[in-house]
Image 1 (spheres, helix red, strand yellow):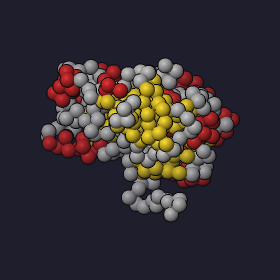
Image 2 (spheres, one colour; image 1 turned 90 degrees about the vertical axis):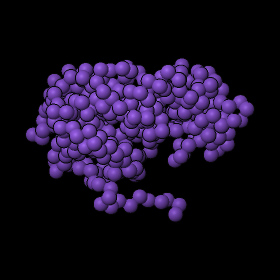
Image 3 (cartoon, one colour; image 1 turned 180 degrees about the horizontal axis):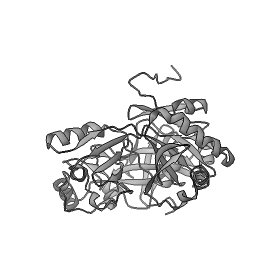
Image 4 (tube, one colour; image 1 turned 60 degrees about the horizontal axis):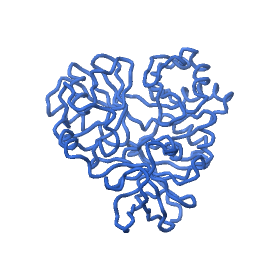
Length: 371
């Protein structure tokens, strides 16, 4: 088939907002946490242009939650991440790499602290629920671990504050980054967090009754028409420009947080027990052998591969792979994330990328694309 399709079944669970996403013209989907996640509405370029100027509503119910509640809840959450979760206040979200006993990246979620001993782990695409359940059982911890009926809906774009102030009230403007409040939208109880998988600003709305998904979408949409609202989704161009990583693309279980650039989100040696302590201490002492970098690839726009492109050094030796790629009109180049050998990772290093359109010259950029 020239245009293969994904066939949805009961094994791919329906989201509470999926009907509206289809009605609004979603053209492509991916499977994320066993659910459909829209990937394109018009074109990636048109979706990007609208996102950076206006406001979009995203069905991100595939961003599933793992709830951990009970007397040992904090101890269990501390165990699975090197980040010090004791410093997370009630009403706060923290970005916390989940790392196993070998130092491997299991996921990179947000963790929301709803009460002293109640947490939501808002996961990227991997089966964290089963992993955490197994740890809790094996350790005989006094805790419940389950997937709650929680379905996030994202509002993203520079007009997000204006829209949500109309929907809820002016108090939403005071919600700080990575903080959340309990509120209502059209009488529907929700948790509203200032967060989201874009660099354009916005909110994630945690619906706690999947039967009210269409009502929640419609209430926001009605107010959003004044702000040129559109249905949207995480945009590859925008996330590359912003520098947002994607679990499963930039990092997997065989990667450690240091080579992914995530060491800045924790300090080794926290007081609480964590399963990755010995492995991360060893990696920190020995140093990493590869590193994730920003790599600008010369030439005409390239199409991102499903797998990877090889990265070569000046001697045509394979030194790494490109993991995500998109052409940016803003920076007039192909932006990519790549993981390469540490001796090829310095800013300014000249490399080559073997693409579907031939071998291209490439340059390692700094922490930002302007560097």
